Image (cartoon, rainbow, N blue to C red):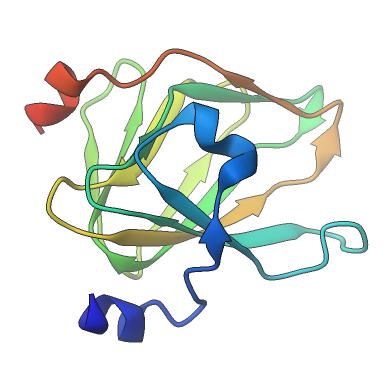
Length: 139
């Protein structure tokens, strides 16, 4: 954990209680900009080993989506219909609107990424089913 904390230069933040129902395991959120007064929302999201979010979709009439910038540890990202992608520090994932996906830590590693919410019109998140223990355990 000590090495991970050194790598995680944006800080772990606080338990992500507002979105806990959409995560399997404990996640932490550290907003890097004022949520009310910004042009772009950016936060560091940290996942304990084995933690991942549910499948979800970022909807938008125009614009929208999300960018993940991997900061520390090892994680997974998967779009529906594609194989999981191993995430490592320095990687960037662009998630287009209307793409069903999930992301989180690997079983044996803490993981952090910056989450950049891409501005758009009529944006929303649709939270879907969990990534099953059985499926995740095979990764």
